Image 1 (tube, each protein chain N blue to C red):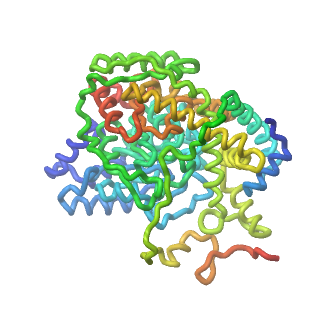
Image 2: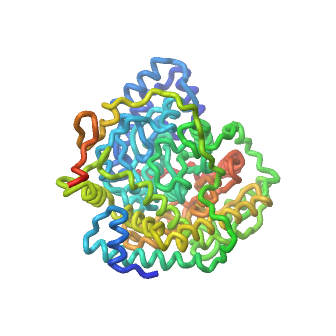
Image 3: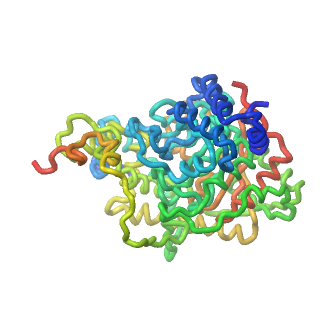
Length: 482
Length: 95
């Protein structure tokens, strides 16, 4: 069995017994990257020198440092890492050397993880295919003619290809769950506010969430345990007590009440995806859960709502990239305004410009009420759908994406079609509730993801159900041939 | 709502973006399509519905006004494209 396919506890036992070292795990990661990443393109920056020093330090210290001791980690490139280049896959930040660590980067360090490198993504997390990386697209390890999904496509592909033990991604409208689904791995978007956003380069501040991408649910619980918690550096981080996520994986879901949103199983959903989800529901039923159809009637308005709100927030957040304090500055500007204009125009790619334009328009004088405010009100209706469903159900279950991965280049010219890939992940983001994607089979040789959605701050139930499902299926054990 | 090239130019100016002629045309048609799709929201009566800007109740966070360790001048300037005398340098603001 490949090293990174072993259970975390087994690896830790071997480390404790001296049969395995942090150095060996680190070398295994770089060897696998050397072997596969030319074809996958998951990494933008490697941390080889520092990672080797770090692994040697961990080995010398002897005792396990924390929950993620010695585990090779990949970090999405919109999460800042002190002294390790962080680009957001944008030419604008191609030379950016962060002077501080994101809270989650620091927490991984404290828990003993080894940062292997920074992972490719859609530029500034805008996109669902990784074709918007300004460096190079990521390819799906299951079939390199296909996209890995996005925007955390590098994170999902790196885990699927066995390059790292786990990765961090970020999710604004589906950017952890959808690539996890396309690449056949586990991706968890926590409740908004559960994980600090300090040091996450902001895209849409009211939606952004950092979460784990792993090969199984247990690992996701370990990583979440490490990164969750209140942070005084993020005023939107929630001051809630953090439960024992790993301890919640009891395997017992008897009596759990599941609602299946009929809007997530209807028009636009590939019949093969639907079939895989129905098969998964039968497994959950066999384990003692009950399910029935429920309606989230405002689902069809979610994509429009999201693109107005997320783009508006992005247009404001990305105003900081002006070429004055960091990033790439354009040559020979006529004056200060021209410096802003030229630097931004040269530094940003097409999708980023498109969303800044959309957001600026939606926030501009005369249109604010019609677009931005209207979308905020519809967001309330979408959130109410979830509130009402959760009065009756413990969990909502459906597909993570309407289809499996699509071919590279297939949708690049049509932004609106591309946006509709997020139709079942976006409502969850707007409601701010937690959701996980777990592998639930294959359609035409490509992985299908099952999405389990929970009540706010009830990650324990989400993880317990996902774990129970995983224990009774083998989909998560399948590996791409590379 | 259809967006014409003139509106694209106006919005680009607000966003401090300089677009090529080709980009202007492309954005005019793509943004028109996206906004047309967004008109779907008008099907909903949102009279009396409170807007949601944040799913959690967000309040101002206060702390004591005490001096804490901060980044050094040198560190703060580490990524500066241009600097002089410990400050970020930009072209003249006033002619």
